[in-house]
Every structure is written in C-alpha cells, then in structure tokens.
Length: 620
Image (cartoon, rainbow, N blue to C red; front, side, top):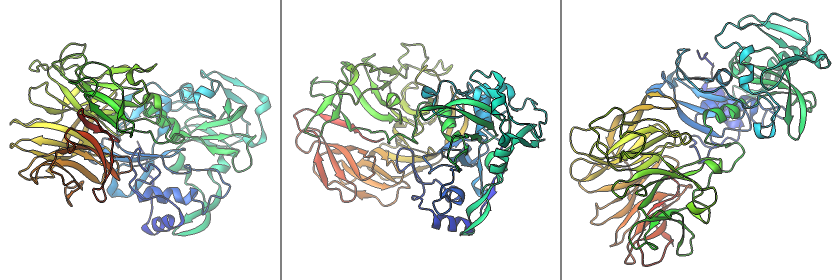
C-alpha cells in the first residue's frame, strides 16, 4: 500500500511559495507545463530544491515539474487523483481532504510490471517490466546498463526475497544488463562499506548512501531557511528493495562505473567520477516511469511543446468532398490528404515525440456510406499523407468491414458512422460519437495505436432521442464537455468523469453532475474548451444568426465575439488561449479567419478563394 507522506502546515506552505520562483498554479499538459498543479506540491519541492536553499547541491526532485494530470486511482474521488511528474519522482494526492502528499512506489512498478490502480496490493494492471536503464543515458545511447526489469530476481516485490546482512563488508557485486551478477573486487571502495541492514525488506545500505539519506543542509521550514535533515528518507525513498550493485553505464559520452540501489520510490546512484555534491544523486525515476506509463508521449523534460498547425477542410481541389489542408497563412493552404473520400479533422493525439504525434480525423475513405475514425501522422510534412513514412491508422470499424464488431457482444448494433473523435490530454482515451445504436451517442475506448486493440463502450444513453456531438476534454482529464439536442435545439453540457476501471484494453466511466451550461431556446454548437481549461468557445444563433461566443467553463460570463450578418461557426483555440480560428461565409463562401479572444477583433483572414473552407482545427 502507499504509505502516508508529510502533512505541511499552511505557514510552511506559504513560506515556501514566497521563497521559490514557481509558476502560477493549475498547469495543463502541453500548456504551461512548468506550473505546479497543487500548492502542496510546490511547498514540498521548494523545501529542498528552490534556489534559496539548493546552491550547488544535487536535485532531490528536479528543476521543476513538467507534467500533471488526473490519473486513475480507485480510492480517490471519482477514481481520479492529481499527480505531477518531476525528473526524480512523481508527487500525488490520493485523498485531497486529508492534506497528504505522497510520491508513488514507482520503482516497484517498474521492476515488477505491475501498475498499481488502488490501495489494495493486488489491484494492478500488468505490463512488461521496464527496460529503461536505471542509470545513465536513455537506452538508445546506453545499451550496456541494466534496466529495471533486470533487478526482478534480486528485488523484494511481494515475493519474500531478502539478502543476508553484510554489515562492514564493502560492495563488490556487479549487475549487468540481463540481470547477470558478478564480482569486481577492484570496486570494493571504503565508502561502499555496509553500515545499515534494513530488517523490514532485508537489504544492506552502504555508507555513501546512508550518509546521503541522513544528510543535513539548508531547507525551507515554516517560511525560513534553516539547517535540518534535508529529507525524510522514508517519505522520499521508501524502503530499499535491493542491495547495492555496481553497474556499467554510459553517462554523457563516457562509460562509467556507477553504484546503484533501488528503493520503493527512488533509485540512488553513486558516481565517483562526478564533482563533489553530485557524486550521490537521486536517479531520474520520474522520467523513467513516465516513459513506461506513457510510451507514446515522448520526453517533455527535454522536448519543446508539440506544435499543432492550423488544419482545415476544403473542397478547393475536389469541387465536392472535403480534403485536409495545413494553413500557410498566405491566403491558402497545403493539401495533406488525397483519399478521394470526405475527411475532417477533429483533434490531435499530441506527443513530445514528433513520430508519435497524430492528427485524429473521421473519413469516408473506406466506406462512402459511413464515416470512420483514423489517425494520420506526418501531416505537417509538405507532402502530407503522401510523404515518406506517412501512415494511416484506422481506429473504428462500426461499418462492420473489419475485425472489430460494432460493439462488444451487442447483436442489436447496426453499422453506423463514427466521428468527432476527441483524445484525452494524456493520449490514452478516445471519446467519440457513434451511430452504432442508430442515434448518435458518446462512446469511449482505450487508444492503442500499435497494435490496434481495445473495446468501445457507451458513455451516454438516454431513453429519448438525443443527438450528441463534439466531445472535448478538460486539460486535467476530469471533465467532459459535449453538445446535445434533446428538446429540438442544441445545448452545451459538462459532466464530471467517474472512472470504474481502466487497463490497457478497456476503460469504463460514467458521467456525473451533468449540467446544461448554455440552457436557452437557441442552438449552441461546436463547443471547445480552451487549452488552459478556463473558457469554452462555441457558436450560437441566439442573436438571430450564427456567431462566435465564449463563456467560462461553468457557463458564466457569456461574451459575443463576432457581429456579422454571415454565418460564423466551428471555433478552435490557439495553444496560447488568446486566439480562435473559425469559419465564416462573410465574403460569399466559407473562409477561415482568426480573431482575438480579448476583444473579438479579426486579426487575419487565413484563406481567400472561391471554394468552401471549413472545420478548422488548431490546438484541441
């Protein structure tokens, strides 16, 4: 089970925030990712790692956070807990009301391949144990270092494994990739003498690590800089789950001997060649775990935020059906799709790895009668889907022409279109509209690209005909927004997501606290939540014709941004939250425009031709 962490007084929290130069709270993935998701996270980080105290000392968490999200955890409210990743670890709040911050047993999960889903030790989902190197460079530049999985045979992971006490012995054992154990007497240095034997898990701790675990130094406590124990090592690290071993690892551009020891939450490394102050370090467990849990997201700690070019649909080259174009901001665009079947983009499956950055579209390319969902890569290349290495991954098969049935064991399902596919901000789930039950409803599925697998399940079901469209996720994954027509007009809804289960094949949720945010007799459509989660853009005919509006995410403070006799619709946000692209026929045919959210001023006409340019997608 996850052990309780530290409770921090408000005085300590406020003092830590005053001393640290942290960014504003409430970060969202891909947008302002260096902000702290919770002030309690900021306080714990600031205690050891703020510039007011760190000096030339190694990092205990890392330079700052780089990803936060609402991850599944069964005992948390709505089975969603707040987590934030750092280079060295992950902070988490499982129960917000108890004021406790923990950092997870990430190393145990990496070694065992068992991802914890709740408090009960066997409430897990299984993956292959991680081959990420425990020390040194990433695997591509560090082929010799052992990965976490190589410690499975010598680690205490609910298997009763224990090492005998080796007090006063020096560490000479080595472990290589593959888990092979050997001895190198030349590495038995005085500082590696075993000085502690932990009887809880049965492992030995050398002096060089024990001194680090109990070191005193400058920290922030109660708003002041004081000298005290730098960390509560049980909170920060947990118990040791292996003995210490020497490894060979590539660090930078040099192959080195590194002493490593795995704890429940952290890895300690000792590199004698490093400068003083950096010889003993916390391993980059947060980075390592993130790569294992989110292999499709890349490395946000070193990569720039993924670019999302402005995409739109046009019939300029076909005269009939929609193909996709990337805006070139010179009055036109560069064609991206060449499938001779209607294709419209709806969202991005974003990644800090450009090779795993996908455009999510619905298209009739395999069936003129039914729209299906696809993922396209290389869309930013000049040649689009004709570029070298471009690929198309088909996601849905609700027209029954593939290996997947319209829905699980549902003989009443009929073939139907699927569209408006919206990817969760962490890239693991897909909310979409399906007509597989006849009436358009919202469905959910796990999003696994390679291999394609998983099952879809309905998340809206009504005993009256309600057409559903345009799902969009809040940036923390806790809320879903969508548009529904139940009473003869379209309205914008928001609901709290409640998870029941999730693994690599299946996810089950319900929508609670459903609220009608627009709630008027007009039509309100094309709702999109901003990347920072604060504002909804939408189109409405409430003033007599279709115009662009914004409102707060709770439905308050509605503002009209356009005022034109033409049709203005389908707004989409820029990544900065400051602009919207939208479609308008104000010049006689539909073109794409950009306006400022602050005052509604049109700042650019993106396309200018005699064709129909519609359905823009920017940063959603």
